[in-house]
Image (cartoon, rainbow, N blue to C red; front, side):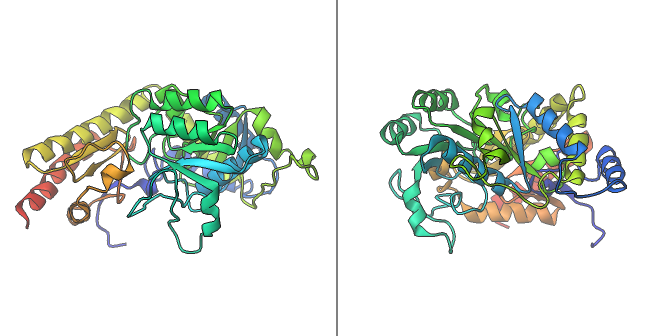
Length: 385
């Protein structure tokens, strides 16, 4: 609105992996708009996008659309409950899975309780639901295994961001979690809203080599439009089948705009661009240069800070402590985080509060300019100016 130019590492909170107004996405959306926007019926783009998701995602045999990532994780849990005939879920402290009541447990607890007790994160979330959620520490396989072993008869699912915020999974953590959940026949649910189609075409499942029972997708999959989905095997996804309506196995799920043709057309165009040779190599090369440039600037100014995360999405945390879980982030200097983000905005670089998203639209010149600005922002912090 001001006419100012900004370097954007917010990317609409992540979905704009191709950058804004990508010509292929704009063309696909305009073409579909001329045909129709929303039908509340199966439509060709929705079918084609579902078929492409099944081809791409290792755990996917079927797809169920929603209109937001929050809905996708909510319905992933609901269908897991229907499949397992159990009610409780286990999630990981600091993991964000949207804004429904089951998700808003121990996302940002200021005074965390002893595991596995949860804490509600929002007014209006019934405290009674705390009895239905177990909390485990991310990257602590021994504790997670012990909780699964002790509570497997009650658990409907284990829900996790395979890459939690910008915390990288420790070697063997996801693999061990997969082994434990399989041993006790508890569905493992990956929240791939952030990682899906970003870390690899097959998402975190491909990138980390671990295949869950169910996965939730959003952001990139719809090319900047409101669309998300649950993906999984027929044995679990069958509970969504309308032919089961009236039986104890039926999971009710529907939404006016779920699978709308505009969002699906945008998603198809986005995925077509991501399938082009060299797309992910270029994304990772750009992200690696930015991440390494930020780390060099931190070292130059001798600040107590860590650069954490994978090249497509990472961040800086102002602490000396190694960032392996949520509680490590509580040692961070929050005022410095706020100051860093403000210094970037003053220099016309915008990022998420706790993430730097990288896109295929970022050029080498953009990276060079951003690294210089990272240094300027950190210099201001180091000087206390």
